[in-house]
Image 1 (cartoon, rainbow, N blue to C red):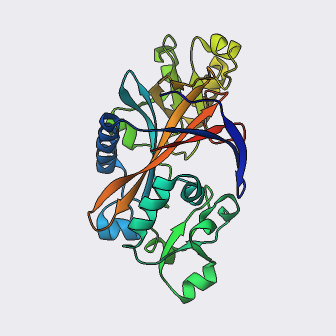
Image 2 (cartoon, helix red, strand yellow):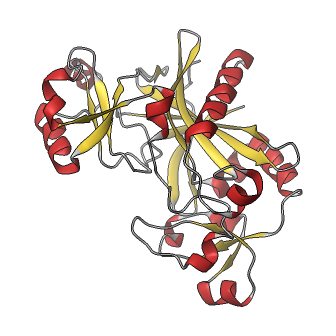
Length: 302
């Protein structure tokens, strides 16, 4: 799997990125691996009393898996239980658009609740928006995004189709064997030789994440930045008390010599009561912190 360099600048809402003309196909073997990882994740992600939890026993209608394919096998970074850019995915990825619209026909009507996070969301591209007062007058299913610490009235939690109280919870990775819990007392026992990633126990993005690799200077010579220093690792552990430590997983190499990951989406099929693969994107960036920033190259995965 390698990307080509043909790109053009694109903007969808507030999201600015470089759009690659290349499309990758996920091999069937790796799709099976991804589906198995979703099944594992589903056993361990904590439940809450939202609508999908009460009626179907799952945390959310949408999932996104961040992973890479190395030596023919899928390597999992994390699974995001409330992924963003759903509106944009409907625009740029035909498979995602077709799958999501097919499954939506079997859903009750869902609206997007306007919160302080809404300015950073593109849910208005695919859902009708309602404010708190409107939602109180006419209760119904809601897609709710919040900033960390933002309080949502309990009245709406039972109508939510995505997690609120457990948003960003990473405890599932302990039982899946993805990472272990460490504290500042474990500094001498961290794998400084091969590299590692520290992440907060509850986080939804790459904030509060430290990535260490002994060959970071070699990466930087090839234009790949974003690694943490030993001081930053120690400070993060002191500030957080404890964090989850994941072995360093090398991102995939792109044709430009930079690194990339795959972001695969799954949508819950209410009729079949299972998550269905809906395509995704590859993300390439001149940083080991690979996320969809303005300097990222985004291409399609089918």
